[in-house]
Length: 217
Image (cartoon, rainbow, N blue to C red):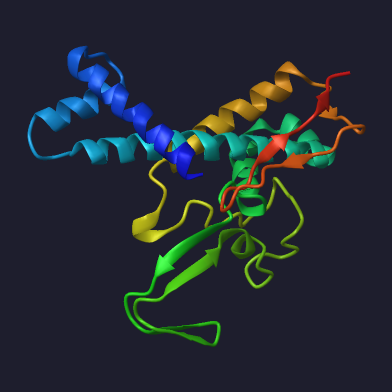
């Protein structure tokens, strides 16, 4: 893990050096320009920003789309509703985020003493919040394990909340709302391959597919 992290850091450092000599219209060039304009960004902050955008703007959105495809293929009756009523697509994405979010947990630091579920938390202690469990809370959602593209309340915490709300949420939603209808329009007979297992990635925090085998006929 540390070797991979260092390799990614070195890659971005080289990219920054290249953009110093030859600007382009890409994001790294724009960040380098900000760096050279004054003290607003350090090189380390540029690397961290690139790292964040690569992971948060790519991995999680890919997992959201994959999880949405799987949910609809597992529930052909819901897919049929979506085909008949395309206006349900945004709701279907929110239902996917509630049922099977691309990020399953997040950490929070208690800034003051508080009580959570009958347990005392001291200031400075770190808490791990299960985002997927929140989406399946029966106190909030009726029949929480059922995937329903017509569900009235699809509220979830898949993008966090408050000051920590995901900056890329609008883009992730837009990409998923475009990708899913296009996929099922292009392959109207798409269905799961019964002879191949569904494989999930074994990555801490993140929740997505390693392999999803399908058939088109």
